[in-house]
Image (tube, rainbow, N blue to C red; front, side, top):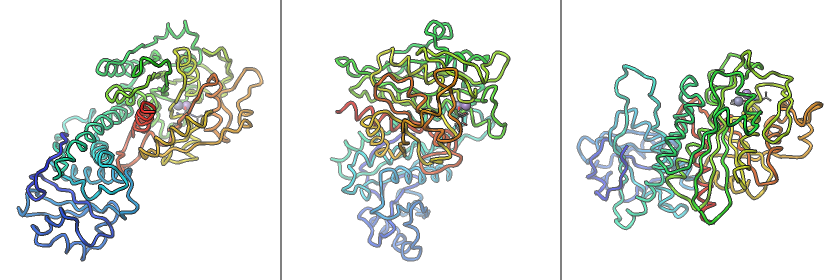
Length: 500
Ligand code: BES
Ligand code: MN
Ligand code: ZN
């Protein structure tokens, strides 16, 4: 989709669909819409008076223009109440409108910002919301479809702005949104590919490509390297699989004068069968997305490589399958870890925290001075927060509020769980230093606190995306399948850190 800003008069823009933003309480049309209304002999005003719901949030009404203006169709997009508008809603509404246009086979769509550019948001932020919505909302995953008609896709998206001085700001907004959109959609692709293709080896190949195209340093640890580093927690999970594990390390230097490194660590379980503690077969197919945290880190590193914030970042992704076999690790085993801590395996299905433990130990060995990990870690998080918000566990108020602040500005909802020391009782083992399951109660917190045992007194935030990494329906800027959740927040966080 080619995206550009034009100063063409609104009635002359030639396109298939022209989007008009209408607020719920609108009775008087803004200037541009008024011009269209005039050209259409008052059709829009008639619509508002005869169909008062057309301004309600997400409502879409199509009007054929019969050649009266350059656009073939007008799409009246209900924006809801003006006072309730947020950038997150602008993004979702843009997605809804564009997805509808795509379904109607439109090849070119135009829209206006002027009516939205309220005092609350600056023009660049508003532009970004519209363009991100357009890119994220029209995402399609067609790799495995054969003999299908060419999928519908919008080729041209035009933002109309008649004030020439605003063009530069809008162009800047488009550029950032295109990078963000590409980064999120990359993460979605990685999640949507089935496990038969998206093996640890493929994850590493994709990482290599991202590194080459964006000037990032890359290091891939093979199984033999992991053995040298004593990464027995990761190796134990990998034992049951035919697929060799990979530890992906990406490095971005945005501030060479600084020795601080923020590490983004993403869980890369390319298929989680549960291992010997095998999962029920119902919905087990969904466990191809258990590498979503890793996909988020890869998408984030792509965006960071292009946006170049003034900060140093490590992207670390431990990748493996979790499979049952004669070689698999077993419930009751006691395993070691890179940190030296021993772990009693209560269930082989609590594998994510094991591979993250070694990845976090390794991150610190590589010089990380603060860590954010992101993982589809616990079913308990889905129970607690549903698919609306991701759950946080942290050891540091300051870093946690930075993550939360970034999430508020992107609209990716996150919520911090309590981390009272009492919860740690649940992961004490009788025969080892720790056990890998604290039972059903407070499962998200005890999983987080397990990971915390491998963090050596540096700021750390854990993001549990078990409920948010996948969507079971099209909704706002999410389409069914992988959501790429976390990419926008982590990029925002990196940029915030880079301007401090
Ligand atoms: N990958 C799963 C968590 C998960 C569940 C992600 C549902 C997405 C949707 C994780 O490895 C897991 O199996 N966790 C167990 C831990 C338990 C055995 C302590 C869980 O949540 O049931
Ligand atoms: Mn599991
Ligand atoms: Zn898992």
